[in-house]
Amino acid sequence: MAKTSVPQIKMPLTGNDAGAYAMKQVNPDVVAAYPITPQTELMQEFAQYVHDGDVDTAFITVESEHSAMSACIGAAAAGARTMTATSANGFALMWEVLYIAASLRLPITMAVVNRALSGPINIHCDHSDSMGARDAGWIQMYAENPQEAYDLWLIGIKAAENHDVLLPAMIMYDGFIISHTMEVVETLPDDAVKDYVGPYKPAYAMLLDEKPFTVGPLDFHDYYFEHKRQEIEGMERAPAALAAAAAEYEKLSGRHYGPVETYRADDADVIMVALGSTAGTARYVVDVLRDQGKSVGLMKLRTFRPFPHGEVTDALGKTKCVVVCDRVASFGAFGSPTFMELRSALYEVAERPLVINYIYGLGGRDTGPDLLEQAFEEGLRVARTGEIEQHVSYLGVR
Amino acid sequence: MEKKKGWKDVPLGGLIMEAGNADEYETGSWRTFKPVLDQEACNNCLICWIFCPDTSVLIEDEKIVGFDYVHCKGCGICAAECPKKAIEMVLDEEK
Ligand code: SF4
Ligand code: SF4
Image 1 (spheres, each protein chain N blue to C red):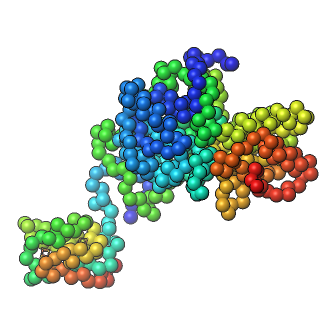
Image 2 (spheres, each protein chain N blue to C red):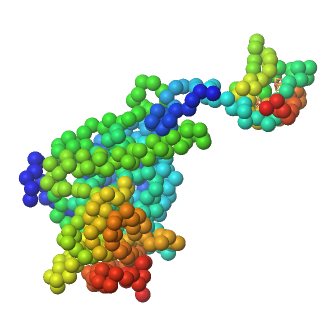
């Protein structure tokens, strides 16, 4: 364990506990939320902190997620540090306002506890909710476990609020698998969190600024494009802001958070790519297969937006076959979202690897080591023969 | 026509930092029909002035004196609301 500048306090926490605890330590000005499984518990715990006077947050209980995000936007525009959380269909109900939060450049942060979008109705994990909003202008990071859920939310706040960026950020963690599973989490002391996020400095604040101004007016063909270009620039500056926020966090915690994380991948013929909790399973399978002398490794993709194409190219450019596992289907597309982005990132690589895609775990379908081993074996076959039989396959479907 | 600002110079997130600058936006160019006043029929009740969404009915000494064609969009609300049928919407052929 690296030496840290503050003590780490070990606590047994589920993903939802960890999220609520991070919120408590941040003590945001405003939280507006609506319950939805598997996020409900997170906000229930936070509401308890509000009730007990542990925070002085204005907690707005709204009638829908559309209202939750709208209230967050109003609060953030007024000059408040604002947080919320949702899952699945609640997330879908926020849809139009997600874009407005980003285009108004309001650094709201939100936990998205990943759950399959209906229908058919299902309350278990996949990434169909957050993946659908990958073009909404939000920073998106996927946590592997409760520890990352806690850490990434704090890092996300710092990066989102950076005045070079000013975009909202969502932190994803897998519904039930992470949200309801308890692990030992190392937390920071309250003061350290407070110092780390610092006092909120809004770029503009309707209720605090002296001079009145207009937020959210009509913006036609003559200026809309310029404002979108400006928003794109904010996202382009996000990698540097995320790296700076993570570096500062590493000093406090000893935990390093880059946009990608590799495991036994340097010399591997086959590298699996996974997001969220599945990365943990894949790490175990890598060890099992390495013990059998098989040349396999893992690249966990932590940051999906901004997509870290440089880091992806560096991590995967020299391997023979990349096996992209995604917990989401993109209907009618050539492969899943991560497959498409990643193959595009590898296009300029001189001897680029072959890339195959597995869609897995939809609606919470359990994806154990046996299934990932099957995907690795196909990757090894592709690496050996140089031939892809099928670009996109489905893991664990009957 | 002034040169429009590029993305590096426009206010963050589409904010409008000056109050009342809608005045600079010449919405009159949107118009197809323009309101024309029949002074004889008008009783200066000013209902048109109350209803105009673009404050384009011009008033002096509590009397209607005409229309601000730089901003009037030609919506026809004034003509529709006038109890004396003193406003006619005519095809604006000048543009
Ligand atoms: S509503 Fe008709 S009558 Fe009344 S002031 Fe306007 S034009 Fe004249
Ligand atoms: S046509 Fe419409 S915009 Fe023009 S003066 Fe009448 S009410 Fe106002």
